[in-house]
Length: 456
Image 1 (cartoon, one colour):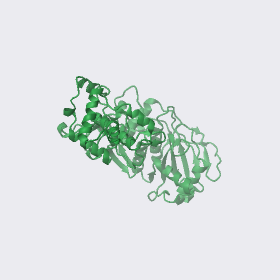
Image 2 (spheres, one colour; image 1 turned 120 degrees about the vertical axis):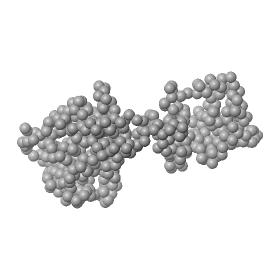
Image 3 (cartoon, helix red, strand yellow; image 1 turned 90 degrees about the vertical axis):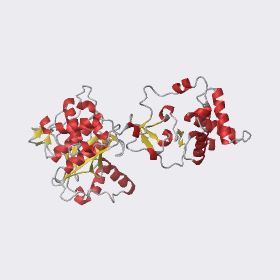
Image 4 (cartoon, helix red, strand yellow; image 1 turned 180 degrees about the vertical axis):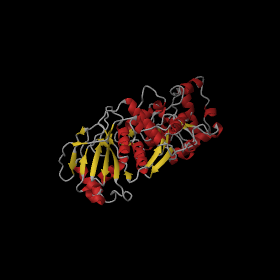
């Protein structure tokens, strides 16, 4: 079988003539046998409700596998043989974990990770040198696997996985790009590689080539091709030039996902939400997402609370979206792996104030709904900064975002005028504010009343 191979010298980039290659492998499922035991473990992992950022396994210091990574490789629909074939783009960590596993199982092969080239690039851009990130693999490494994300204006951006394999004995860099777009190494990239591989003679006398490889025709499976090419390289097997079809890619996704569970037992699985007695779990919910009122809201090029340097986040266990704990109204200390959090997306219908308004349609009994102690505590928390608030910030900094302040002031309560006036009177009474004090009406109506209404 003949192939066209682009082989370039790193010192004199010229292509070599075509060569005859033997033992090129066509795709067969027998090359990638799926363990039914590992497949059963993956199904069991998916059946229970678990946090997506739970750790499943650590392959190296730079490759920690999470549930979300497995789902990016093999969604549950592929295990169920769903004909819709939902195939997401593999995330960086999934590729890094699979390559780390392949390298760990193969003698004299070492896997780098996607961010390592970005670190080299940043240091090279700033210092024109790489001082602390030279390749330092174990002794007697014969192959380095370097996955890269390309397609952006800089190495920090991109939307396509490729693989560079550094073959030390052969003094050769092999480029695997399933789309056949990035078939060469740019001059600036080569300078970075020479600096990074100083231990290996700065790649002096090395060549660059594009071996035959299986071909991608979709826009989401490049990560699958990189993981597969890495395994073929580790096994010293050559691929033919063949377009892989959906059924073959489905098989590869299941294979790579189940392979990553090989050394994981079901006892190692993170605790599923609901395995703890329901009475022992305090579920935290908030209306922040539905209200769409971020404490750190941007206004123009500025944000509220600009001096805040550390923002705590909480992830919804239902939709996997993130909220600031300040927006969610939750003390981060109360959140643990055993305490589920819902942003409200699990309501039977999108949460609104309709149920509250309906319940209070015949009149608001302020004294029974919000206590004096709650008002006092809210006041102290706002004044001390323990609770961050858009309205409090805008009240203290009226000229910071006048337009936003005006919009907030248009809506201070979800209740009718009579009910709202009752809340305002209660705020004045409990906090002993003086209506003659020019600052009191502003604080009572623009800050405390809206915040108390949110408590309601």
